[in-house]
Image (cartoon, rainbow, N blue to C red):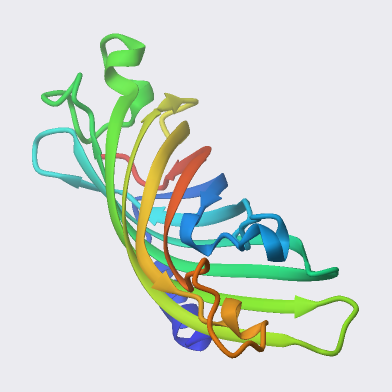
Length: 230
């Protein structure tokens, strides 16, 4: 699976000839149904906060300022929890495809070919956009212990998601744009069965679920680089 994702990334980059974007963001995660009961780990959540990096390709749609920016994204989150006196490290790697669509609602009839820096009109009007972003993610979950007998649990799963956000394009030149952005993404419920495998009990803990949705707030920057001029 990792090899296929790498080839997909290389094929994606090889086709870039107009404008690509490089993104970096911080992620603030909450998976409410994955929280351990207080009797086990003080109610802590194994999905910690993290970071993400991505690359996208700019595709203007029609004669209005609605832009499609399909993005390949990699994110990582880590959390350490004392589980019944034994520190455990929980890691999630996320390989994602996001179909970002930017709507420049204050400038829909503006010139959609030239970069933000070259557009006439108010700075905020021509640069502000709202974003809708459906996506699919491939999660790699790992649990490792630090002190006790070796416990190394790895598993993979998929999850679909939907995101919304907002940003402001700041044109540094005709070829470079800097865009601060922030948003919220909801991942539909997915399974992390290994969370329950840590404990050998006759009955599963009724207070603990191995399936949870993920609610994620994020904030970051996009660097847009244009290679042609139309």
